[in-house]
Image (cartoon, rainbow, N blue to C red; front, top):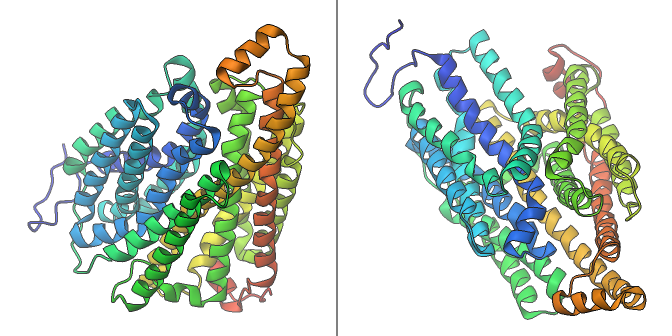
Length: 512
């Protein structure tokens, strides 16, 4: 039996069971990544149970992604200053408590509050998960294997979430997509002090003002778009939300320029390659989050898929994302990033254009699977490439900040993009609903008319027409976002010879 060797107080000790330590860390990452998709499959059931409108339902996703993305950099800083294991456990406990509260929610605001708290917990725990591997495993083959397992869990978490969400919703209840985190979180929090070594603390400052102004500014901006979807652009709360967003984000830029230790180092945007990667990631994430949200509604509410079947319907996408990522990882040192960025964003754009043609008569293969496979493979080509480009030319001590900022842009961009698509969806759905109500009243039986007068809900196939039209129209701004990403890849990204040498380890020709 292995024993722990003594170590200085406050630094912990090297775990006697590194395999268990890795399992605990990887389980945390799986839970956080999985929660971004496991709830998606349950959205139709959540909408019915808690009486969400389709536009307000987007907050179930955005409340999580905004707080997660907005506080991600602050969570990483907290781990450095307070100790990574301590912060890791605190994040897990908050995430677990929020999951329990979300599963018990009886009103929409209760679920949205719980989802925001989940995002906070994830933002605290997730950045320290990867950093803890460097604490638990010595540099070399052992750490490389651990990092490989961690990466595999991160990549597979989305697919597992889709399938698990379908199983739990179909076999038990939508609440179990949140309850399932509770025993896992309790186990992780209980095992972490025993098997994970505490990191050395580093002195520093918390940029709370920067974190709060950026997060609240993005919340106000997203709220403005979603409010406009339901109440119009001239609504006082819509105008007020946009005004608040502009003010808060302006304060954020001023604070970050003056802060000694800013949460978002604005100098990261000085390099055109890095700025270009952030624009591409924001644009692609905006399109991706919107696509998954609305296609989940389409396959369940229009095609009539059960939650399990809906989860299985999305699995091919995760396979092609992994295939695209694997291809780019192998060939990146040979070809450089730019060919993958251009080809990847081109495929994404074509997939979204195809997706915008969906209607109530579309089949799964022709209207959903085909465009999603193109989209997924294009995203796979981009994921690794964007990460490499974001950290190229960055000083080693700032590589973590550059990579974390890319993850932040993904989460925040996804929430912002979903809100923009929702604005278009809401307007298009209202217009189409007016047409379909007239058609329904001309064809409906007296019993159907009486039911409509009581519920104000159109039955199928009229409701399918409204939803499908709203979804297809919502994909038009998604196409515009993908075109922006493609233009950025073509005209902004400039790969230097030194970048290729760093990728390949040898001198190579530059690609412009």
